[in-house]
Image 1: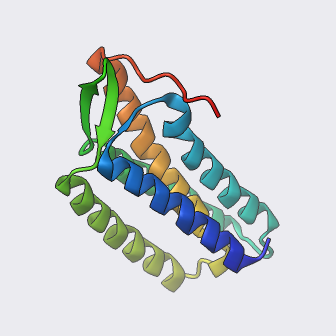
Image 2: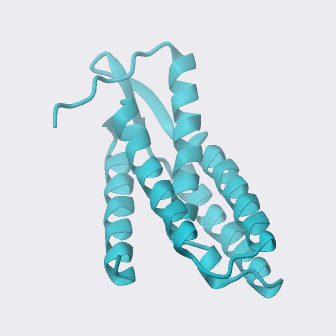
Length: 158
């Protein structure tokens, strides 16, 4: 797939998710996990097509993915969960955006360190980084939602 097209698609998906969560939205499993799973899948697919990857590259990818998931979970802990219309809703807060900025700084530093220590550029798909970060966030929100006792919203018909 054309890298510019892929970048545009990722930008649109991420922007849509952030806007929806900033204004507040009902929490349902499909909406919570669809974008992170799709982005993670695209990132993994990019890795399978990359050439000249080494074992060291894969260690950096796995470590970076774990770091991204943990940072996403920490970000997910800052999302406001509330009951509205009898179901669970989520909304990003100022603390969430501080967590986003911190996440970007930490992952940029990690990426710079990995590149400096020899990680191949094609071993760092942006879609994978964004996907696992949103996946960590979604897992935290899902866990918090389940423990809140507030029912998740039903999936909207498509």
